[in-house]
Length: 245
Image (cartoon, rainbow, N blue to C red; front, side):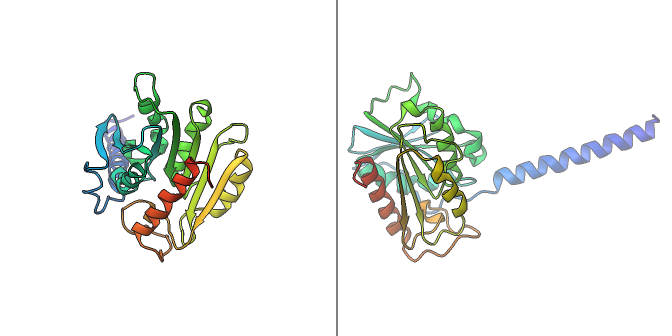
């Protein structure tokens, strides 16, 4: 191989690497930013918020039940602070996890931060949940640790794994105006659910309003406010945890 040919090949390789690196930087930084969550990510008289490894703890008035939550794909985790704040205030402490590159598929085991042997949290009941891809990855995680959890909470999500042989309780909640969720996948996943499976539709709700990150491409237009959607979601979670659905 001549020197000129070698330099041409080297230049081509460098060009490809730069293009790929540039795309990766763009992809990682192209995500939905949290909107209007400053108050929700700050402690108040009802809920104390503490930063933990790879996330936040929302410590409300409850002491027996906790939920670990995985955010949706390419969504800034703090976008779910309003939902976590209200859930904690209702009596269910919450652990909102941060994900590598805002993708739960890269951080499936992040719940270990909270449930690990050295974490030291002493709740009687544990639930794991998530929104969209975060819900799917929470399902993937709990499928491998079913004996350590009471249940799974899917918000606009479905389980990619078979949970039918577990004793888990599962809540699947999504909006009637959701334009992002693959309903066919939800239907297919019903056969993979345990006996205690509860599916609920929130009238007027869409995909994005489970978080606070603005409009999502392809989503339907909600006919209820973000606050109303959060209230209805928290009510469903509370009923589910109380086994009163």
